[in-house]
Image (cartoon, rainbow, N blue to C red; front, side, top):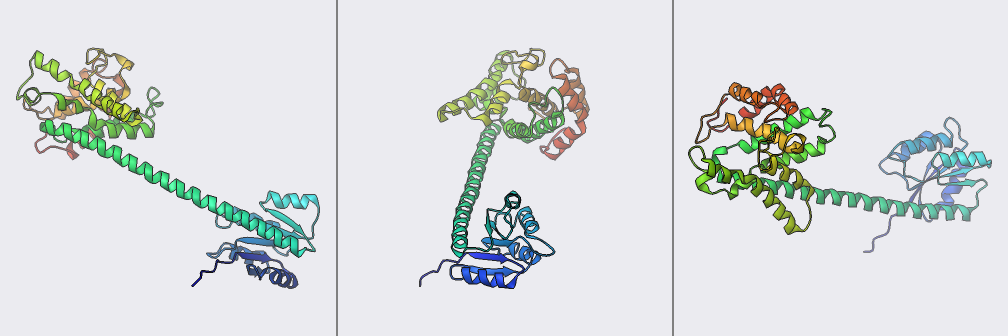
Length: 368
């Protein structure tokens, strides 16, 4: 059984019954013809589920003239793409210009010439078919690009989660430390986004990137020997020097992954900064490079506050957890020395929210 192609649908709008009959007879052999005796009926048909492919529209009609009908058609997204050809006895240049300004694609003067009408209709239907095809293709391409983007984003998220989980398995006493610091950092960043010092950097996109990268801050611990990483007590000076290398190991692991890909991956830039510099201190006494002030990447300064607070309130093999109030006092003492003062002030303002995050993602035994 052969499949017959659907005939294009033409809507003819005219208040004169004889004109509707004439145009219907002329077009019905090649097209499916619908008729409307006034503008209101035309709008109802054009904006229905079975909209026409093209409209032949008389200008001079009572109550609502063709210009107003065209204006309303083009104002409604449902009918805006339907090509409109004016059929009219008005021949002044200003009349034609008005029609084109309203969005009509053509202007045929009465009395009409059947060959001209058929030729113009065929031409504009072909143009509409091409436009519809391109629009459908563009919509498909946009959907495909979004799908691929979502896949890449999901791959990035999974990669970060796997890498962060790997670090956590080496140092299982940290428990939910990764989740807590991730949310602390996001909380600080969102609060500080309007701040004049940080507004240019803390865009919504950057904050999302920061949130996703934060779990990698201790990824370098996978390279620290167990005898140091899992030591049930404080580290001696030599052991501490080895422990300090986790910042460089973490950064280098990400750099090595980028080199393997042969490209620089933008979403990993923040992760590299956090890995390498979250142990730097505002006064330059931190490590690995002894960076000072604004030379420390903002992502690392935010993580420094989040990481220290969580370390203070968390139980370790070598220490009991501090209470929230004790941690607050210790961190306040580091304002302007260990921590960027503005970020530390934000932490103090948000201390109740920090405490809530700590409770929400608490380990089985967690100080409050």
